[in-house]
Structure formats: structure tokens, C-alpha cells
Amino acid sequence: MKQPSTRAVRIGQAELGAGAPLLVQSMCATKTTDIDATVAQVHQLQQAGAGVVRIAVDNPKEAAALKEIRSQTTATLSVDLQENYKVAPAVAPYVDKIRYNPGHLHHIEKAKSIPQKVAWLVDIARDNDVAIRVGVNCGSVAPAFLAQYPGDQMEALIQSTLYHCRLMDELGFARFVVSLKDSDPAKVVEANTRFAAARPDVPLHLGVTEAGLPPDGIIKSRVAFEKLLARGIGDTLRVSLTLPNERKHEEVTAGFQIIDDVKNGRFRSVPDLDSGLNIISCPSCSRVENEKFVELAQQVKAMTAYAKQHDITIAVMGCRVNGPGETDDADLGLWCGPTTVNLKKKSTKLGHFGYDVVLDRLRQELDALIAEQNA
Ligand code: SF4
Image: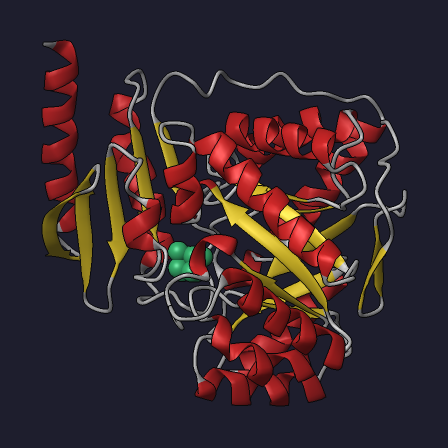
């Protein structure tokens, strides 16, 4: 395994980059406002070896819960600012890293420029002694870059990331890492390889989003990580898996297993993910709108097994934050609401259906899609 050439970045008690041991991260899937359950899960993940544990915070109630969670654990914590970067001052005092998505900065405070918004976040990071992750996602590239590189989403993604690195450089802020994620392992490999060639100094956080249920979710992550880690690309990683809470630590053990295998030259043969049925599902987090989500993902996988020879992607997502956008590229997409499941064919909404009937409707749509393909 080649040594990365990145610089060192400290995240709380964790060090990454500059050849430090690869750091494995994970994320709580409990309700953040359920403080006892979240603290217990932080410890569950920490005991499995997670160097950084992420918690979802979207509103003042969750920010207040985070403060209490912080007081009950010494774990290195991070928060993802999602579409509301304005929550940063409320969370930064209680975490060691904040993540912002360059593709989500334009939504609010439209009169402010992107450099102004990034400078504001960097000031908060400095004042609170926290690191930053610039986390881009193929599904949410900044519109300005998509317009600049029409028809070339990958170039737009990479140029957007490099632009934010330059903003950090201009602000004299070096305590940042970058992630370039997608649910397609091939895109993850391409994006990270091209970024690392342009900025070999910047530490990389590797991840395949919505990888899904084990074992497929582990295989998808392995497909990407084996190629990248063997080339010395990657300083920290997360294996995102759809798991019930009591098994959430398996994300961490899967991460360590992949690292150990790559270190020892144990590369597994992997299925060709470009063909056949592909079920992707998010790893779930505090935002999940109905606890039936994991069971739904498992049922979708079992029910659709008959279509395994068909080149069809089905996405199952836990909430309205990422569900609507992240399912656009799938042939069929489901995202959970509190009492119903929204069903989509590509970006077209087909309606919302009760948890007890959505599988029947999904089957009808899947059969129709297979008939279209056969025709
Ligand atoms: S889709 Fe929603 S529930 Fe699933 S991990 Fe993303 S934010 Fe959490």
C-alpha cells in the first residue's frame, strides 16, 4: 500500500494525513434528541474503533441535544451542516469537525458571495478549534460549476472542489480535508484519483454514499477503496451501511477489514457492478422519518431478487433531506416520509404509498421497466 503524500490534519484527538494510520469514521443513526440512545451509539462506534463519530444536527433542538451529548462523551465528534450552513455557530463549540457541502451554499443568504460564506465558516472553525471537511457529492454539485462545465458533471465536481481548496488557501486555513462521494464506486475512484493528482497535499476522506445493505454495501465500498488505497489515495474512510442500530458498529469493523486486506495484499474479486440489479440505500441517521426504513430496504432487496439479471438501479432513502435529490439518477427511487413512502421513476414522482402497500406498487413499476427493456 503506497503512503499518502498528504499533510497532517488534527480533528480533536484524531490525527490524519501525512502517513498516519488510516482513520475509520462512522455516524450515529439514532434520533439526536434521544440523548441517551445517541451517547450509547457514540460509545458503541467508538468501542469498535471509530476515530470520528458524526451526528446529524438540523435544528435548535438537536443543537441543544448535541451540547448535552458532548458533555457525556470524550469521543471525537463531527457534524454535517447539510443544506443549512447557518447552524455552524450553534454546533461548532461541541464538535471537532464540521462538514459543509459546496453544492449547498447557494440555497440561503443569496446576497452573500460563496467566498464570503466560506470565510464565515472558516472564522467559526478557527474560533472553536475545529477542522473542516469540504464534502462534495456527485448528486449535488454547485449549480455555478454545472453551468460552467455543461454535460461534464465529473469535471464540474472536481473544479468546484479545487475552487474551495483555493479559497481555504487564500484564507490561510490548512486544517481541512476533502471528500468526493457518489453511490457509484467507479465515480468515487475517478473523482478521488483526479483530485489527488491535482492536490496531493490535501487529505482525503473516502466514501461511497448510500452503499446499501451488507454484504453488497461493503462490496461497493471495497471496490472503490481497494483501488484508491492501493494507490496511496485516502487518509480516512467511512463504509456507509444500512443497518439496524444495534449493528451500526459493523460499519467500523467493515472499514478496518478492508484496510487490513489491502495492506496485506488481499484483494477480493468483486462482481461487475455495471451490470445486473443494483440496490442502493442510505446508511440512515437521525433524520430517518420512519423506523421501518431499514426493514423496507431489506424487503426491497428480497422482493426484487427475481430481477437480478436486469440492469436496473433502485434507490431506497430514509428521509426528505437527501431522498428527493439522491434518487433522481436511480431507475426507481423510494424515500421515506413519516407515514408513507414516496416512489419515483427517475426524477418523476409516481406518488406516495403506505408502508404496507409500497412494495406491491414497486413490483408493478419494476415489471413495467423490465418489459420496456425487453421490448
Ligand atoms: S438519506 Fe436522510 S436518513 Fe438517509 S443518511 Fe441521508 S440524511 Fe440520513
